[in-house]
Image 1 (tube, helix red, strand yellow):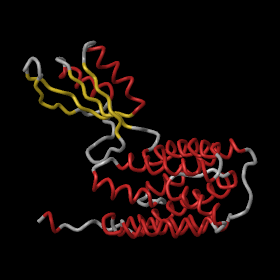
Image 2 (spheres, rainbow, N blue to C red):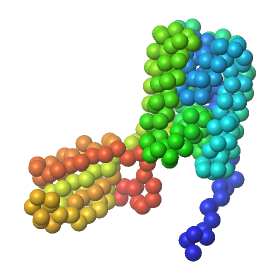
Image 3 (spheres, rainbow, N blue to C red):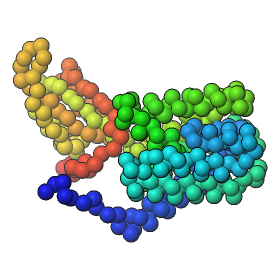
Image 4 (cartoon, rainbow, N blue to C red):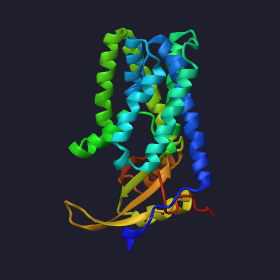
Length: 290
């Protein structure tokens, strides 16, 4: 029975690969914090931001707060988020904390604050993105946001945003308001880099096309673009007439060519385009074009 199926265990190579990239990502975040952000009173969002402020107020090591503040959230979400995720996250937090302890009081790099914001955000985003991509997390706020989202049915991203807005407001009182504004800019850069690392540069787009010439358009996409299409049965809400809706997934770079193909056949065709975070299963690879 389907209910008795066991989850496939990770191979030794997959576990090794996961550990390597989580290690690299955690080290990058630790370097970003201690070498680029903390020396200029710039904070990250989430638990890292809270830890930086607590360290500034108490004069205790940042590495200590990164560990002790994150762990309770990790324990809280252990049962619902799974053993593999929890262990991967705990490992990442330990490596990140150790890295910040190693570089503590080593001085800022670079000496220009604006460059520190730009490159700190880039390195931070790359580090966090790697950890997320390989099954972990470096921030307890993400964990508690998932749990809150399940209870009150609010998107995880919105919960995280509320947490971070509050953290940046508090940072304005703990440090200076200019530091809080720099922190928001750094956070924005980091979020964009995280998206690139997790999703990749070659984004996919799902395209829905409604046209009376659906057969010709579908064939043209397969012949000229090398992408398979799916025809979905539909009925016009106003006319009540039956028709076929074309659905396909293409890369970002192929989107302009697809539009050209459709409009060359039917200028009045309805085209709806949506971003696709990831494509799994099926046969997304291009067919050979003869």
